[in-house]
Length: 472
Image 1 (tube, rainbow, N blue to C red):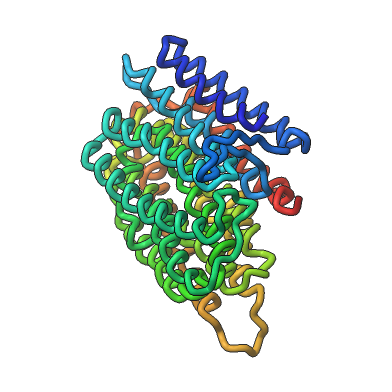
Image 2 (cartoon, helix red, strand yellow):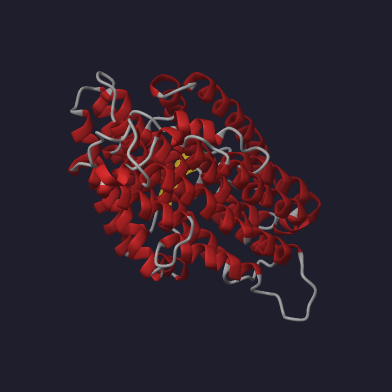
């Protein structure tokens, strides 16, 4: 059953390259994966796992399994995939590359999250990056070649550092299996933790190794931006939670002050950079980088105290919420560009008069992004802030995590400034040349928006629907 979740998008992508109807095949495969994932997660016997020995020495197995965190990441992956194949405007004659690449990325992401072998955990992620680079370089916008090379160089650097950290960790445990991972000797923990923080951190766009992300998302075709920002970027955070904290908890604690400083770089520095953006796509790309700092704050709280009961649920819930909200924002930004011909904020205005449904959906996604109560991101961010003070007793001196949490609260203000200003300048005020004849969002474009918007509402009202997987 779990293997089918990887094979369905993979084989559908092969079929599209072989001549199957591209869009129809991608939609059917995405719907099928949602049904299979729903059945698998509701049937414990279906999640017992899959294992196939690939090499005897070293012992490498294609092994799949579901834990609480990977279950949430699986749900995120299949929902965003369905929305992504509906989103964006495929260039004429490029349907095979457009839809097959989207499905290949989805298959790689799902494979990485379901893998219980370190080798395939790493390999699936790297395989998913290949269509990402190709799509940006071939079908991207603006300075697409520069963006493709930049993301390639940065993520290749991060992947090499990560591989070194993973190999060093598994050399101490003697196995690639997740079930055999254990705390390694103290003498090696600082080095392994540093390699994992740099490797995973680069893939997550941790400050200052973040400058690849915003240009890449701005140049990427819409499905790629949605899948990478919404799903693939969570790979590094997932890895730190399930591998870094397991093999080198003392090493993570050793580097805690640096983690706190760097995550504040994401929240404060990148937040201020986001305010200064002149284009919607660049603003969203930078905002995505900024919000990674909040999830790193939960990881910092867990590093300070591995028994922190709020940190992991906070990180996972915010990972899910951010993935849904940023995917929705990129999908709607693509619609704005199709309707108006521009994403320059200064050239937009009054779009709510001609496209009220688009304005409503974008406003909902924007409010989710800045943490409006009742939407999924709010629950995740509040839990992150609670996690920062979960182990602090009034009267005690403030530690690294508590001080960082207090400073990080300013990020809420920064988020409100850039999102509300962008919304006002785009959708409010008088009509301008670019918006006076803009049509409203039509039913095909509403499908991905409704899928993601309803998810934000349901999880925001009842976050336990996601958190329940972490208690199993």
